[in-house]
Length: 218
View 1 (cartoon, rainbow, N blue to C red):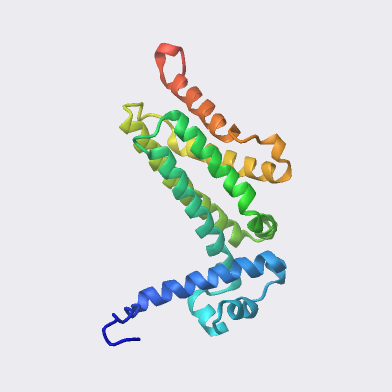
View 2 (view 1 turned 180 degrees about the horizontal axis):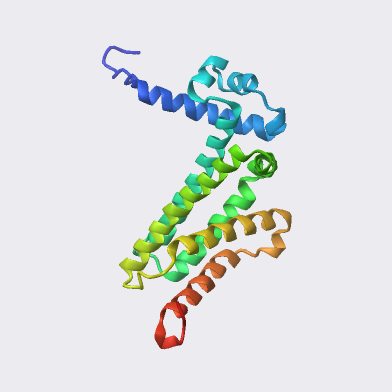
């Protein structure tokens, strides 16, 4: 390095920790995808990331916690994408439909490495109540976040604030998960714009049920 060249900034302790966690999660995704949840070891994950087992345990209490964080981080990033699509003030209804449909295709077709792990961990979790709690808490967190986005969207468009946004968010998320699984099994059953269209149907029905002029109830 030349004397006049700026030296790279040293990472803070928090930045270093965040980078270590990110590298461990990336390594975990690779090892879990290759060996499955049961077959993967913390030793191999740590080695794949370039760290010691001690470094792994200083960031994650167990393999279970590491896996839960991996699933949560992946699903949270996708939820953030969905929220951006839905809440875009400049986007039209058609833009939202196309954006949500494309998001589902990306998850179903490009995130296949996590598909068997999600199924494996689901079976593992339903036999252990403590892990069911993790799954429920994760879903509720995502449900609450999406519910808030939908409420803000309705308010911004001058629509009714009386909609059961928590219930709507639950259906939207469940529909997404179900169609992703079906798309992975048989893409022909879930054509490109089906998810966005189905969400549109949901909101058309919701708006009708909240609008007395249409004879709806609720």
